[in-house]
Length: 154
Image (tube, rainbow, N blue to C red; front, side):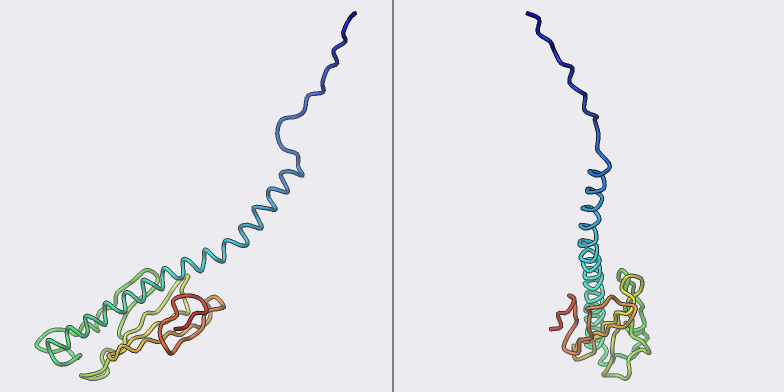
């Protein structure tokens, strides 16, 4: 008895076009979900830089005030308020300088990915933030503190 061996058809190695399109669709859906979250995560990191910069500059202002009893330039020393310091995509400054010997307001102004974000602190430690276009939607101005996470005003 002869046994007949049948030749098996060889299957092609690789992917079919349908398998490839399904994979591309899945990757596209995951990217569409992940990218906005990643973008907010990056913005939150930049906001942390800004608020850290504001806190540091406010501490410098208070230290200067304790030494000189004024926020204005005194004893031949410039006020720390004249410095403009970059913190990531934010610039921390004291626009217009100290308003008088006992008052100041510091500002962190965003650019690039954080354009439209502004954070403020004054000599009393009052923190506020504003958000305007072209900032992403979902972020709101806050008069009770700094909004460091989307939609969460303290």
